[in-house]
Amino acid sequence: MDTQKLNLSRRQFVLKSTKVISAASLAPVFAFSGNTKESNKTRVVLVGTGSRGSSSWGKELVGPYSEFVEMVGLCDTNLKRAEVAKKLIGTKAKIYHASDFDTMVQQQKPDVVIVTTVDCFHVDYIVRALELGCDVISEKPIATEADQCQRILNAEKKTGKKVNVGFNVRFMNESMEMKRILSSGELGKIISIDYHEHLDTQHGASYFRRWHGKIKNSGSLLVHKSSHHFDLINWLLEAEPETVQAMGKTAFYGSNNKFRGKNCRNCEFTQQCDFYWDMTKDKESMEMYADCEEVDQYYRDGCVWDEKIDSYDTSSVQVIYNNGTQLTYTLNAFLPYEGQYICFSGEKGRLDVKLNYRQPWEVEATLEFRLTKNSESSKTWTMEPDDGGHGGADERVKDVLFKPNQPDPTGQKAGSRAGVLSSMIGIAARKSIETGRSIKIADLINL
Ligand SMILES: NC(=O)c1ccc[n+]([C@@H]2O[C@H](COP(=O)([O-])OP(=O)(O)OC[C@H]3O[C@@H](n4cnc5c(N)ncnc54)[C@H](O)[C@@H]3O)[C@@H](O)[C@H]2O)c1
Image (tube, rainbow, N blue to C red):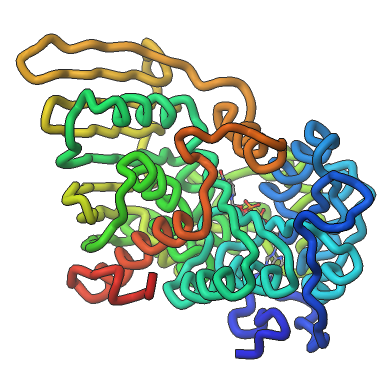
C-alpha cells in the first residue's frame, strides 16, 4: 500500500465524494510534541464534520476548552457540511476537502488530528496523521477490520506518535460505579458477566436509517456500537479477550417489511410506516444533512427497510478472557424500551446493574445497583446520570485529553490497544457469525 497518501479510493463511502484523494507528495514529519510552538494550546484539526465531530469535538471543545485548545482545520468529503459545521462550532478554522488532508496537516501543523468520520475510514486518517507526525484522537470504533487494526498498531509503533480513543462510556457515572465495586474486590474474582444491550425503536432505528446499517461502513453494530460495551468490560476486568463466538441476524429492519422507499421525505408509504421520520421538523439535521445531500447523496432519513441493510439487529456473543472470565453479551435493536442490564457474578457475590434510559413505565431511578454477597443480605442503591453529553462523560473525556496534569487513577484514558481490542471482539464475532465457528483473536491480528 502507498503510505504516502490516504487510501480513500479503496473503499469509497456510500456517500460519493466529489474528489478523490490527491497523490500529494509528502514530506516531512513535523515534530509537534513539546516543540517550539508559540502558544501552549494544543492545535487540533477535525476530520469528519458531521454531528459528533461538530458537537462534542467541535462546539463543545472550542468554547469550553479555549484555554487549552485551538482548532485550526476542518476536513470532510462534503465541503458544504464542513461549512455548516464551521458555523455551528463557531470557529475560524480553515476548511479542507478530504483529498487535501495532507495539505491541511502541512499548512496547519496540528499537534492532534481528531478523527470523527464514518467508521470504516478512521484507519486511513489515523495512520496518515501518525505518519505526518501528529498524535490522534479517534472516535470509537478505532477501526472496523482486523487488517485496519493491525495497520494502526504498526504505524503507532513505527512513528512513536500516540492514538487515544474517545471511550466516553468509561466516564459515565454507572461505569465509574461498576469500576469502584469491581476494584474493591468485594465480589472476588469475576467468573462470568451477562451484558444485555436494549436499543429501542427510536435509538435502534436511527442506526438503520444511516450508513451504520451497512457492514462495509460500520463493521456492523457489533463493532460500531458494541465496541463501547466490549471496551467497558475489558477495562473493568483489566483483562484481554481471547476467544469469541457469536450468532447474529437482521431479523427486524432491512428486507423484513413489505414496502420501502429511498428516504422518508420522498416516500409514498409515510402514512403506513411506523418508522416515518419527518426530518423537516429538525432544523439542525436539515442544515447539516438535507441541505448538503446534492454533494454526496447522504440521506440522513434513509429507509430502515432498505434491502441492502446487512448489519445485525439481533445478536449474541460469548467471549472468553485471558483471566478465564466468560462474557455473554446480547444486542437487540428493535425493543420497546432502552437500557442495559449488566450482571457480574463473582466468587463472593453478584452485582446487578440496571440502566433505565427510556421505558414506558415509572422507574425509581435511571441507574439501579444491587450487590448481593453470598449468604448475606442484598444491598440496593440508585444514581442518576450527570447533566451534559452522555451523562457528563463527553466533558470528562475531554478533560483528561486536553487539560494538563489530570489525574487518571483508574486508567480511563484509552489508547490504541484498548481501541483495537474492543473492535476485535466485534470483528471476531462477525467472523464467527459468518463461519459458524469460534474465533481466536490471535488468529486475526498480531497484538
Ligand atoms: N462516542 C460516542 O458516543 C459517539 C457518538 C456518536 C458518534 N460517534 C462516532 O463518531 C463518528 C462520526 O459519527 P456521526 O454520527 O457524526 O456521523 P455523521 O454521518 O454525522 O458524520 C460523518 C462525517 O464524516 C464525513 N465523511 C464520510 N466519509 C468521509 C471520508 N472518507 N473522509 C472524510 N470525511 C468523511 C461525512 O461527510 C460526515 O460529515 C463515528 O465514528 C461514530 O462511531 C461516537
